[in-house]
Amino acid sequence: MACSSLSGEHLLLFSRPSPPLYHQRPTFLFPRINRIQISPSRKPRFLCNPLCQTLHSPFSLRALLSRETPEVKDDEDDTEFIEIGYVSNVHGLDGEVRVKPSTDFPEMRFEKPGKRWLRSLVSGRKVIREVELTSGRAHAGPKSWILSFAGVDTVEMAKEIVGSSILVREDDRPPLEDGDFYTPDLIGMKVYLKEWKQKKRTRQRLLAAKKKLADIGQQHILEGLSSGDKDQKLLLTNQITNMNLQLFQHALHNISKPKVCNCYLEEFVNANSAKLLHKTLKIPKSSLHCYGSKNQQNGCSELRKAGFDFIVQGKVATVLALDDGKVQEGRLQQNSIEENVSNSANCVQLHEFLLNIKEQTKVEENFPVALIMASPANEVQTFRDFLVDHDYYGLDKEKVWILEEDNLPVVSNSAEEKALKILLKTPWEVLHAPVGSGSIFNLLSTHTVVDNLSEIGIEYVQVCSLSKRSAIGYPLLLGHIHACKADVGIKIFGDEDDEFFYDMVFSLSFLRRLATQMDELQFFALEGQRSHVQKIDNDWVVVHPLQPNSYILRSSIYSCLRLCPPDKVCMLHIEG
Image (cartoon, rainbow, N blue to C red; front, side):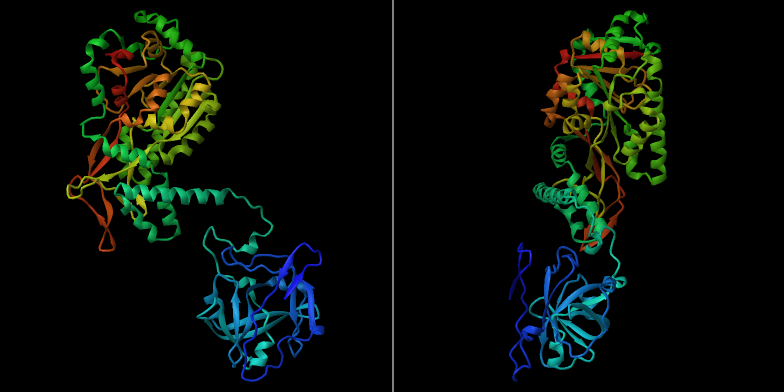
């Protein structure tokens, strides 16, 4: 049967399964035409989630099949109920009916006996009456259910309720998990496609990551996606999709095993000592933090003045690593209290680092240096709030970036395995560690920071660890690298050997070239002893090693010296 709406805008098709043939002539197949009521119903709405939806047409055809007058309720009472299905046909000869469900909980709604309500139309008005469900079972064929109601035990009585909607009270809806909603509750809300697009992108990235992990022999970390609850699977999905697999694969192919992080600097200095001799400036430690151009110590005033001019003209940017290597090494074993202490200590050190900028430089307005901070993932918001609370310490907030440092998975060092395998903290958590100072170059290229710095007129970029020895935009080193026409300037101390300290200046042109040579950076492995989980005979087992069992993949900032000609490197040597 077809019926067009009165407005002529839609053609609505109404169909119901034809009644089966019986061994005796049925009382009727359709009611007489003068007993058919055409009445507008409520505006279309979804009754369940979008994967299981029933859309009511603007007009409904209902036959008055009831032989008795049920209780009639007003339309307002209808809001107390929700529809869970409708009676589509009779089934057999004993009063059973076939029901098309419109609920995500058919087992609970149709198998459990108890009170239900039927809604039909009488003289153009909605009729709701209470019935007792006695039994229900899923139909083996089409997606429907076979139900029995008390007092309906013949074919004729079953036919009278065909076309009726089955209802339950709204307050009888089962609770949902966080993030799940009943569709009627969303009516009237604004719809944004951003989340849907984000989920689509996540699925695409997950598929690409799965293929990549399989190609490099690391598919074992995907096993957690087939078990666990929704939050656990989402946690693993986010870690997999956010993993820098290109950098990870490069690290696996280029690891060596030096004893200390700054071995690259020692190798470079020893191999090029003669060339570096004429480009090394030595100063006493007492003049380390002299910024102003009026200072005449050691004949370095012109270099300081030139460097200071670069700073006040806004041609210098500073990249600050907010976590030194010592904290990074211990983070895998820290508990939450120790992490909070570490965060607090870093904030105090950052406070000391930035507090005296105006006092040291004598700059009255906003300090013109652009600042990029590389922060541990769990501390990004902490440092952002910290800067806001202190009004950015006189920095131009439009030239401040806080980026999340790169992390790579921790891998096994088992001689029994042909390849280094990623270790898991839990079935849904990858054991990972920061890459180290060498990841600064990847971070700058990944976030297009170099391009942004070029647009605002930056010529030199300082990269340093958060240390009392570091000074933001140190003028003497800037003036020295400019005078030597070098691409890399290195500040070193002669009194101590701190493998976690670094303070270097790069020309922006060198950083641009370096961004195209990231596959040339060298990695090394730090051996350690770390607990992890492993799947054995379909069970997850916690492994507590008795000896070193893993590698942290690290990269040193000094590995970039392999890509720079020695005559393009200068040094500032701090004595005493």
